[in-house]
Length: 239
Image (cartoon, rainbow, N blue to C red; front, side, top):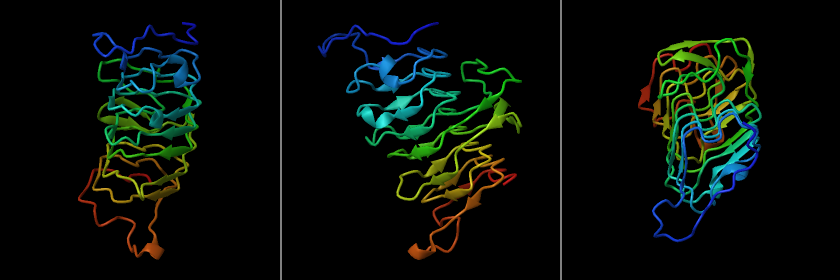
């Protein structure tokens, strides 16, 4: 498909039944668009991003703070976007969870059963910065850069690159890190868990250079905060 810009028939009349507030599942997947604004409804009206809506596009930056009514999103919305370098998540207090595989780079099977990337495909992530906004939970494999062939099978690949070096949850509202949320980020060296309560299975697995840090100047004495109540299996495997 050669879609480069979408023009929406739109009305501000609130009584109109089919008023746009949703980007449907897979709407612009694998198209050459470079910004959300090229293919999006008016910022003040967007409430839901469908699963895989922008998968595989050429978007370089995602700023969801522009959408004050955004409440939720499907799986893999921005997965396999090879030029995506920065992410800003909503600060509206309504959008509370980063969806599963939302920014993942790698092979995965979506809940609707679609395998996104061929098993032997080369892939890489240039994601460098994440602003977590007011989200409280990070979904399964949300920022992972690995290959997950099935929901319970995970393997390390050598044919990818990544760029994420730091995850700092201090000052955020994040209390839950999902299964495999940051798995496979080989350049990730600095992680501060803030006030996290639960850490899922495989959350940081294959982050071979990762170091959990704490702020001694703030009186912290342990890289695992005392808010943690649950750590999943293999959460820090191969770290």
